[in-house]
Image (cartoon, rainbow, N blue to C red; front, side, top):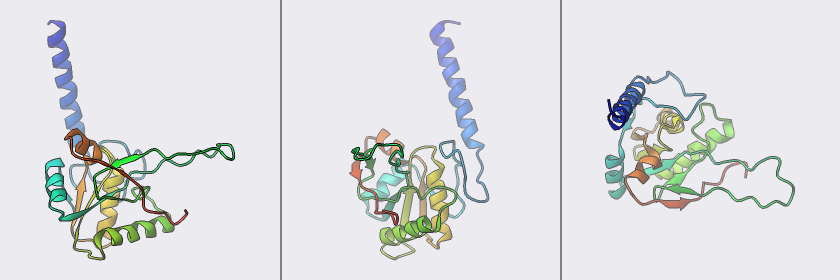
Length: 185
């Protein structure tokens, strides 16, 4: 077997194995509590799972509110006093609301309230308005957040598991985002 043919065969095997591993991920009963950047299930009971094409159509039709739950990197604790700290910019799907740190499996009561208030703002108080929750590809944060939105009584929840990775790969527009102010800030 020639080197290029061997490499092609190896890549095909790896891609097939990766796809099989992703297909085998099942939904946990509760929230994912660790290893948030890992293959995610293909389903979320009670929510609609959408791909990039459908997310784009929903976004262009203004028929939903988009909610990003990507965590925000914390300010390093050991920075000397007076050191200037600049957050890493977050490029987001335009018109999204960013509720960082709300996709963890367990939330402090203040963060649970922050999430609930953020969804209320995103939905304009209408629990039947479609909410599209996302983060990055292979990110359990968005899965947890979509599951949590369902638990809060939102009846039209869409989970976009490809997140901004899929959006960017499709060359769709992104804009710099600022997170909603948190209760501890």
